[in-house]
Image (cartoon, rainbow, N blue to C red; front, side, top):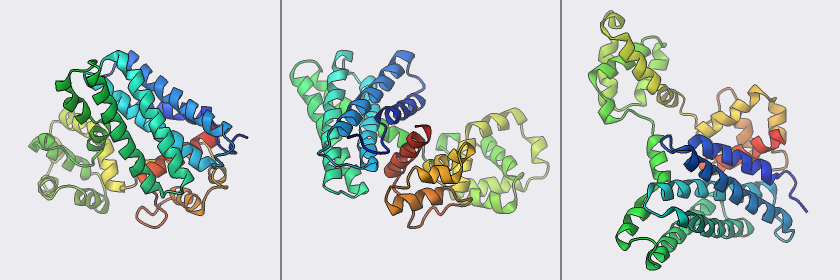
Length: 313
């Protein structure tokens, strides 16, 4: 009997859409299409298997978590394979091996009642071990040069994305002109708002910016085209520094542009109290970002996809 509230096809489509949006910008259409198709394919296979196995007795949240694990790791390892020297004709084998391992491990974490944090760590350990063994096996079979193995295993898209999403200003961008551009922007904010942003930056940079903010007629002394280019490039980072609200929480809040709070909350009415409290917190005008209603980022993403699937069903 299908799991109530879990739509494998819709959930797989949502994850595939995210894979398309977050694929490296320098990848061509064939590479992006490959990633999207694999994420959709493995999520669908996993979802169907869960839905058809009545002996599992999983709820919709657990089913979504298993599918999320498979979708995310399929995405990251697809990117890693394409950025490495692994031959194209080996990609399917590697990803199929990983997807099966992740499915079995993720399923067992849910059946054994692992905490979300322990489930994330256990699946990550499985991915690392399985990927390393599969690459080494291909090397033994002569499909990958032995001297390339270490470089292949050191490639990590998930680490690269984490670094790219770190709030702050890269050292190579910290030029005098660009610090002045930030100062010009902050002079248009209230003192309280500007100070919140500055306190989230390195002291050396914030002090330099404050000095620029005290310069009279700064807007006339600064090249407007340079300032505009720089500020557009880093606009999202200022927003992150100012609000500190995790992106997943912001995304859940954005659902109320099309749906009422009641409709959004209704999608999680049968879930655990902590999940319902988390979603309610996300919908508040000023959500609590440090309190007891916060979930870890991987679990928050699962909840987001679960709501998205429920609203579009």
